[in-house]
Length: 460
Image 1: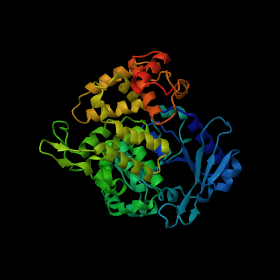
Image 2: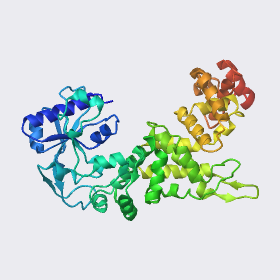
Image 3: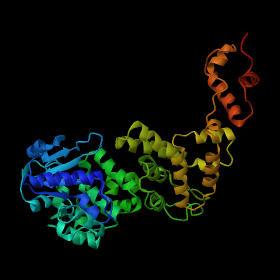
């Protein structure tokens, strides 16, 4: 059911102001698509015959960040609103020699001409929000308010993702559109139209002309929008997977020991795991899930007893680090993704861990993500959640002060006791902390006695 949000109200106000000034103005693009699909639109964009200089003059709070491409951001007069509305002038584009931006932009007063330079038919719909009373939208959008010059309504109804006009031209204009086609098709559960699919397959190699940051952002959206498995199946089907993530493409056909992985090879296991990712999950959990077994293909071997992947975690750490750097992850994001790869096998040992070891395990940053990854890993193989249930129960029942207690012993106490600072300090402090975490000692005096018993008395 349609609900008028502050973002919608802001866009509606802009349309009304532009119309009152004698210009054409419509809601455009993704917001129209989402409204027609019965989804909540997050952002509302406006397309208009008014040129950027007019838009900049008409509204008090504007940002000309894309004015040379006909785009102006209009902010609400309420400075605390926290959002902007993109207002784009109807235009037709010249050639895209850089595979991203048009060389020449020509403004037009024709909404049809503007729509035909957009990417996909389902994103090429315009909506007149003044065509029917707002209250009638609770029963569905008024058909009379939708302008469809490209067959977008029919494709929405049929569940088809189709490029506008000649698909090859649309993808040559902006190579990233190939990844966006995959993402939209996966997100909405649509099929890629045959001509659109053929065009992507023929042009997939050109995706390398796109910046790694833009590729990363599209892949992250695929992983976190709730249809990650379908997105990666489509990446494979279109030939884009081996271009953007050859390490994942190499998982196909890499067998696993059936007693531990009855589901099949590493690729199938990874797809099943991606199917477990929830919409809105963190990007680090999503990438950790994708890369957790990335070290298996290069370490595959058939031993006398069974298939083995000796050292796949260590190899996976190096590969996940390289992939994170390649896609320009932040240092913090890289650390977490690599940590997920590094620790995903440790859950098999949780029942045998000493209390001190288990507590240190729980100290991992964002341990909830490690727990979530293990659950997905299990569900994508033998569905045995025994270790996950054990770890979750212990983690949830253990108070924070028990996991991270105030140290009973520090370097200052060791120096005060007469010990000379050196490499052995670390071992001493580790031994004292282990005993504290195990509950064997409770005071600084007991910690010093333990150090003396294990490492000897300080020099006289």
